[in-house]
Image (cartoon, rainbow, N blue to C red):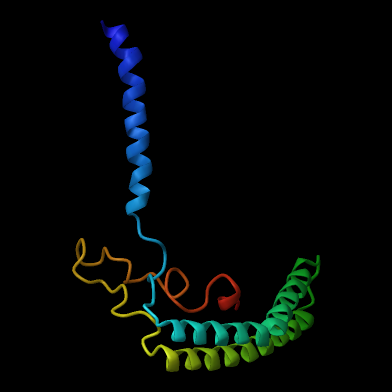
Length: 156
């Protein structure tokens, strides 16, 4: 009796656990703040200015990557030259400043199209599972929100 239950019941239980565990992913929310509820015109305008920003800053992003690689090579030397490192860091900072100026212009243009930045009320602490347990407090700009982080929009 036990052997029959084990051979038929165990695979059924495993299948049930597998289906239920995979189905929980369907209830999960994606990273980020969700959709911005833009009109098609707003979405088109944002796409256009983002594409323009990406085109305008391609050279700066490439220059930053190259300066970082050059700086890393200077640091990897057996006897790093402090003057060369400081000079290269200043070069990198100058390119970063140019990039940041263009980023500010881009974000100001985007806010004219979508004043709230598509955030609505955002992910503040709210009245969720308890004070301090929400995602809004203490995550920082680069983790989930807008601002500098990974990818082409936040290279810094």
